Length: 604
Image (cartoon, rainbow, N blue to C red; front, top):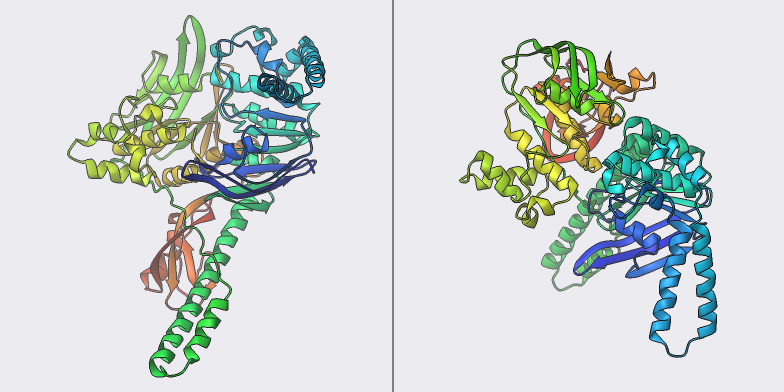
């Protein structure tokens, strides 16, 4: 066992972030840590690393050989790439913490062993100086492994792009991995292109270290994780398997808990009614007290926590013509350098196109050229009826000085405050969050405000630049579900392979100044098994009379409860039309295959 946390609790003032979180990490473990934004994942990591103390709970750490990749890469002008690579987290940080503790003890004075502390301090200073000896070859090799030029060693971190800074931090992991037992990473795939993410996956699969990683990258978690820990409502629940296994097992868990609670509530209510009747009819006896004792001894079942979901519906404007956008021999030059050339595209109504490629290859440049935001050469034709909605990863349409509410009111009119609040609420932005300046919101909250603005536009062509950046997994699912239902045309630049497989039906790869098109998903393009599945909101229905679903062949009995997603509506069309199903008002999430186009159900 490398590390064990048991019943960890942590509060910040009146806000209880963690109430009961436990985890044991053994040698060779690969654990994915998930939860919605604000669930307390990063707080839990800091407690595990000793950077923060829990309010209650036990923490046992049997190793100090820990490598740590922070969520936010170093961006200071004070440090060069060489500086960052020369200060790995693990034992070096432990030495520095101990030196600070010794200084504090000496400053307080009192009954202490001055000689022992001085000797320990001198020994630690010697270790620190030895660790700072340049290992130029190892550092340069680490940079090359993640696709960076070794000659950038003396560049300051603030001069690098977000993706380059993240790669430098990954290099730091590589530098220290040989001396670590455990690698802890907080959102390691943020700002990385697909090639680097896939390199990281392979690297982690080969490393001898145990791995604990916070990530919203579902393909990444599917590839590297063998256990999943979810933090929700301050508590933790562990599942064996990768992310896909977690989704299925959690749905089964919720279904089981719901049935158990429903049965318990029904039985309890019945016993309470009997006790009440006995007390009324036989008031002179104590029979009702026996019933009340029976009720108190019933095994209490916990009601499943109701998690609020983002609900998004993107309405398309009137359809454009069949041909939406065409280019022939398109090229783009910036600063005297050719970025793209020979781009031939034929985008038609209803196409959902994913654009991917390594950082710096020109993906965003391509999109901006197609929108006419930067000059280009060659032929470019856009349908006159195209109504474009543009989502930028930098959220350029947001005014950071305004609140989320003020931002929406500028678009829809100041008299429509209730409508603005309602729309923000659909994205789980309420209370103080809608009244704070956008500059103070988290990246995920800003992304949701930007999505709100996009919904206000009546469009038939959506151009999206990294639409899932900063979003947690439930928010990603909601956006993907909405885009699957959208009947307009989509061009999306993204590194999110799950998005490319669940939303996009054709690919554009940008590399070496050229584009390569492919009719199919990302997995199909790469020749990999493509699990065309997505988690969607599902309405609950009660079966009023027996029927058989012609598409799946499944039989339903009277009283059964059925979860139906928008993607499955066609397959239940006949049963719904015949009144065999009645909506209960319940709503859950369900994993479905969106590759199939279900045929209308036939009567049986």
